[in-house]
Image (tube, rainbow, N blue to C red; front, side, top):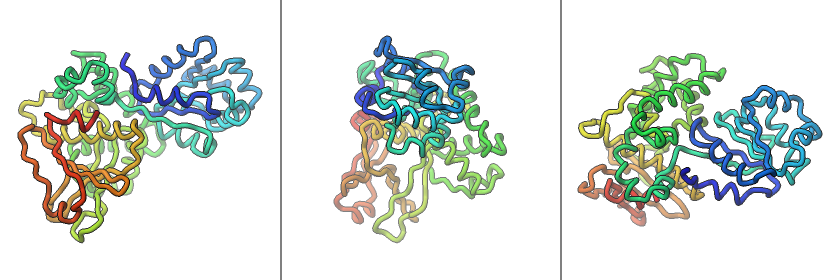
Length: 374
């Protein structure tokens, strides 16, 4: 089993008197990770699957007494698929307040549902963790860095979901099932989604625009939705860990873009599944976009797992001078240009360097990307 980075972080926060919540998209390995923790606890642990009807019933109209009767003398209770329980926020609050000695861990694949149900009740009472598709560092640690680098072309096309990694030769079938089951199953059940066919078109439009600035008006005109609805749908896609936004950076220059955004997918394979584009890299017209999406999404995972508290941006002027990726932290600014080919020239905009003379700059290509991600 591939060691997940946050396993140590979760283990370090056990029995601190707070609920632990683990959220993320379907099939990222949340249940697998918690089963490892569960088995390590032996007879002290209780596993509850909220997908099962009788478990859901036990959480109806919860009281501290009824919950303690359910858990008994176990020291740790793991509640999988907790978002299925209507009153999960109240139940977790009662457990945290009444029985702080019991370690409760709750998982939810619909991130936005679990967050909405637990946000207020668990204020100050929880440690929250996110789990993403497998990160470069996790894969490199598992199989050695050189082996993972040899699979770079494969990762750019098929991504890094655990189910994809474990089914070599059947990646396309697995990705199609993943996209159809967890993307649409969770999102289309929401009342906010009035036109499911439009959501599919929106996802496909975003898939074609990775690495480009996204205009809600333009996307809306293309797929037949108003810009407000497009924004609402994109926010839901963000909360369910399908896509994320990267805002534009603006500090010094009048001609810097101030309110623009790019949208990336957390996983290249899901992006390619949405537009049924699985051909090998040779001859692909979107290699630059795939490379940029891979680097930005992998860096996002790395920063989250390492508790990087800075901000991430892209930079562009009205004259179309641009920097692919920026990070700002502790008063410092780092600027990165992404080029697929190792022999690409390192050209950072002179306008940017003049405006931000103390910033660090670097070119990230297929020959040195490991230091950017590991």
